[in-house]
Image (tube, rainbow, N blue to C red; front, top):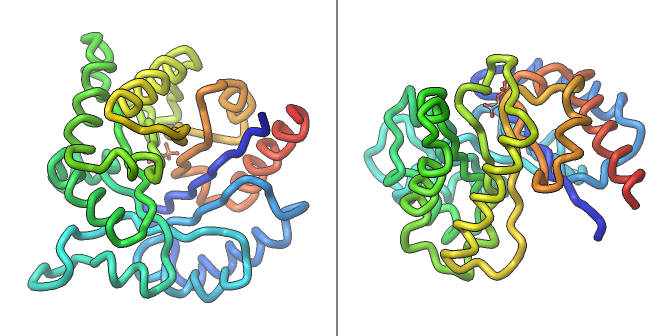
Length: 256
Ligand code: PGA
């Protein structure tokens, strides 16, 4: 079966509009060919709108890093699903561990955001993952199950296949410490099983995130359970990011 990868660049709170334009120009120049992988850029809100212009005729997707679950109203500093869809945005990262840890997001708010994204036609990229303490206490799989069961409450079975899942062990994010292939494989299998037990019928996509870099991408590409990557730090450096895409494309060609 032909394997397809989804590669998501999570720029977090990085890059001004000017820097984004330079990145996109360099990105287009450095890429050897249009990738078969689905590449999605998730820049900060303000840049998102401008990036939509820059990438207008390109095959790349655009995602936000957050949204609010309400339609509109007195929610200072928040962005609604309708604002995103009307700006041509197709994806949205939900429940990133930085939002959970620094901005008080819970499985409940993740759940409301996932439902809002789905009912608005946005593809949620739902992040889950354990802390170092959870892993040390052998709680990784229980934590993943809990986050999934609560984060997906009341999501119709028919909608589960529309969600992209991202397994991001918190201890591996931005630390340079990547999870081992066996740990990733085990976590991804658990995610697949839990979502299947809730009722999904199609194959779901599960991305790995946490210190993905050009020097470790090949090892990650060999993990059968991995359908793509959510990349922070390495997506900010255009040469590094393009190298990750090139290696992924080479891997796909080798497999077919
Ligand atoms: P990192 O971040 O690649 O810098 O570890 C990943 C993420 O937070 O999505």
